[in-house]
Length: 409
Image (cartoon, rainbow, N blue to C red; front, side, top):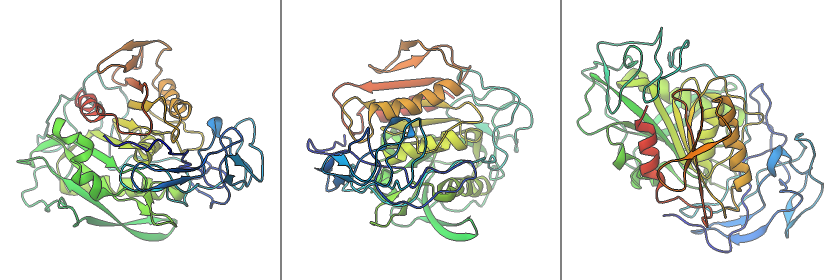
């Protein structure tokens, strides 16, 4: 299990100069975010990364133009009332499992996102344990879902179903796939890996699991780590491992500047649809730390495409996240995490509790100490796991638990 070191100070993942608005733009950074008026400085990451700076405080409040120095924010007091202050930038440093420090640059974006490639049809919710598919879903050549049952009319396959000459996946570490992604008129070549199930059959519609790496990590690290230990427990699925863009300090992350990472995700979904057979109603996303934050971004901006997300130690970088559709959520958080605080993680959780129309009470579920919220919309559970004594680390139950959570749909 990955851990941070005992001396590790607070991270400041995600916010740039005033978080982006609904037009999908993202301002440039400058200055440091404050956490309740003060931030930590110094501290050593779990493997090689030094932390400096701090997280934005809860409620979206960011200090005005101040950098975190020596434990207190200079240059401006935090804004009140949830307003976006000017001058906030991503702080550098932060504990990542493999030598990563926080990347700088980039900011959250919001804005409407169209479903990619005719994903979930509207007009109905998925039944518990089934995928969404009622009326207008894209059917293909008798494709059937594997690894679980679909609701109302069967799996929604892709144009890649039935192909007898599908392309070889980019599933060897060091030899990624490449795709050109256009954002605001600028074309950027992005890279990712695809791992097909053993004995892949182009006449079966498989689930798809996107796995986003932590800040300062890489797609290769996730690939070599057996996909966050999810794949051994959910082998009959197609895995996609994207590569983040490097910030000014060389560390890769998912700031989604001008929707660059959402556009990348949509481009990958579209390319997969053309080449492989998968169930469009069973697309999932998960990740740790910044990868968890990217999965929350997907939950905020692409809930009509993705069926569920698994979040490990992440919070929302999307200003005023307001999902247009329910999405199932599994989320874990250490109660001693000073990188992503429990309060920030809980704020993201509460967004999905609200959009899924869950009640305020919970019931204990496996594994301990996880709880599931009561009375959520059918097929859209929210599971929350607060781990006592855990810092910014991958919980050893996360991989099997996320696999089990995804397989129910």
